[in-house]
Image (cartoon, rainbow, N blue to C red; front, side, top):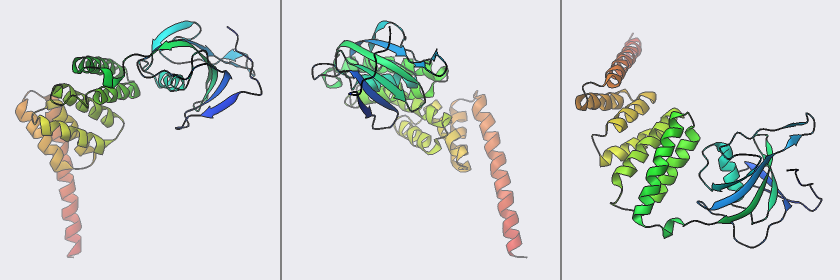
Length: 270
């Protein structure tokens, strides 16, 4: 399918976060726009680079080059999220060009859509079911190294469970612990510690939260806090090789730190 020509009357709009610029090539009709979980019929087309006569690639879960049906919000790559963001601004029949801040371009066509249930329309069991699915898909994304996709899934699942007090506590605890794992991977040590503490306030013997908080504290040189977490973990699970290894590291760090302090104090009284 050939890309529509750009006219002088095209209207451009930049997303609030600056991640892309959308230029409307053919306006849509109506007033309603897709929302999360909407079933959308779209056509995604990479644009040719006139200097090289080659098409840019679209590294996304949504298939390019043919009409497809997607559920908005179900893509797990950063580019899928960009496509989702753009779709949320489109009307049925609209065709637009998208220029990403990452340097790739594509044309997106929205034929039609059918909005699914909004969060407030879901009953508790439906919210929990969706949250469990998001956690499982997020887990796969995490194992595949897609931290952004994992975080997006875990965070969306938690939002679903905000209004289900008492009905999904175990699920909320698992999601908080998983988000802490993402924090650790991204070096957000304080955030990881806070999330793990929230988990441990609810479930004091949560093994993963103890380990992750210990790692976060060790990363912030809180040797006493880290040691307490690893020692408790080892008491609960004596077979934990990870806890035993980290305790040894923390003890060595504490020893070196105390030696440095003693040396510095000694010099003060010379």
